[in-house]
Amino acid sequence: MIRINLLGQARPKAAKQAVPVEATVRVLMLIGALAAAFIVLFVVYVGQNKELTATKQHISDVQAEKARLQQVKAQVTQFESEKAVLQQRINVIEELQKGRTGGQELLTAVANTVSRTDGVWLTSLSKTGNTLTLDGEASSVNAVANFITQMKRSGYFDKIEIKEAKENDLEKAVQTFAFTMNAEIAVQAPPAAATPPAAAPAAKGRS
Image (cartoon, rainbow, N blue to C red; front, side, top):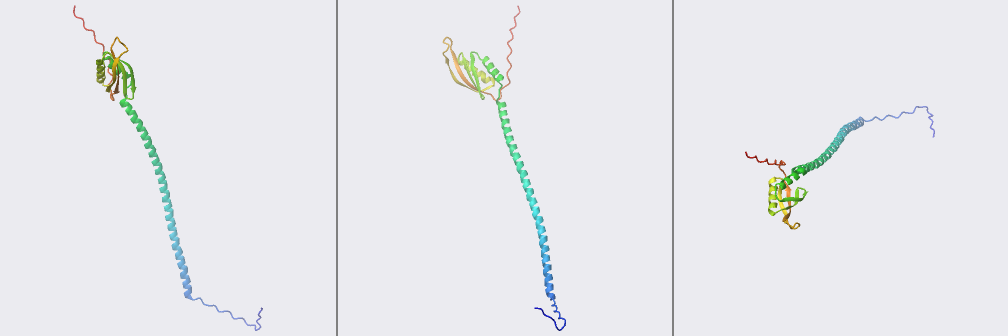
């Protein structure tokens, strides 16, 4: 509906209502409190963010150090394994050097022992580890005993043991004894003895 002012008078303006000062102060205090709270929260957030970043960096450093130590541990384990293998090889070599007797030196020692014993000759010689097995024949039981004595005196043999000694029936005309003995090679054999020089001829008397 359209209203027409027929009197021609201006309409009175509505009076403005005054805002209470107390309400304004409360609003300003609320805004200030919110602003202060926001600032405090922001400062706390920034601090915690820095602490979180530092913690993450520390964790990363610890993980990197752990990985490095694991690699070092693996290297140490590999080194210990290689060291054990090497030490085992060294031990084997040392044991071989302690108990070794050269083939030529061994044969020379046996030959010299036989040559110093009358009535004994060998038919076979075998070596298993550090033990010799000798098969031979002798003209008598005393010759076998003398052979054992010469072996002991040589210093090349230990723990000499007769396994078997019996009369040989192959030659009816000649009495011989077949024997089998074992002897261990001495750990520290003496140096090979030089072949004794031939005896000088006796000087002729004056005519």
